[in-house]
Length: 311
Image 1: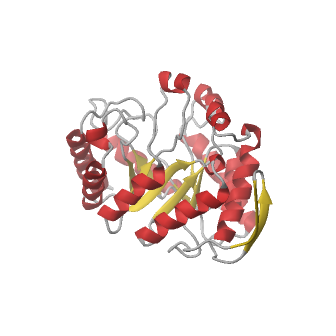
Image 2: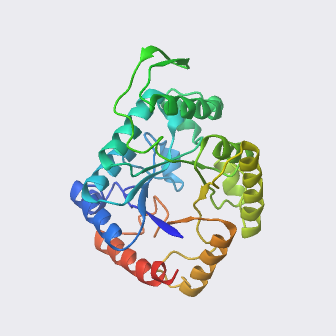
């Protein structure tokens, strides 16, 4: 089991604590030294006010934050969780991810999904109902762009004839693509176009809000993994997809209700199911529960001692 830790850069109101080059540098270096395998950040270019008032959150531009983390570290993986490709022209998305991967020496994990926040799609001038088709088409086109060959392609709002984009990514053949979401289409997308799957815990009410399928228990995860492995077999894949998931039903690390021994047991159960990475976060984005960088670093050190070292 490997661990990827969420950076609290969503807390844009505490700029000096979490939103400067110095802050990201210090956090990334500490996380790497503590034995985490990577860091992740979120993506919201222009969220609506109602979303922010009901538990939503801001985000810094993901590739900018991760470029700072890359410059401060040598082995830490740099993950977008999730980068909404459908918000963007696919050539611009391909350029941003290739640039980050090239600069970091091949450390990017492109976590992506269809997206769910309709007003944000509207603000960005993107057809919300076409988001799944846009994502599938964009991923295919980005892989073609990343070969460094001549591209001829047309789609919604773009047309390219005999165009080339360099540099290619440092990763060969491209950065691993991990697909987020619990829906049947997300599972098929992961098997057909991805290298990993990121399921998310989702009670039924929340699942409706994020326009995905419920995932409320380990049994739900097990059933979806059976479906995923079936899609993999149909595709003739030789290597199982990576899967990133964490134990369900636990209080956040560092709070009085956290049960470390039970959490480690939960990780072992997930590993038996084929989960290869665990995403970790010390607070839900947007809550502001981590008030200082020192607090975040203390939690990271404790998690490394109490969880990573015990796995």
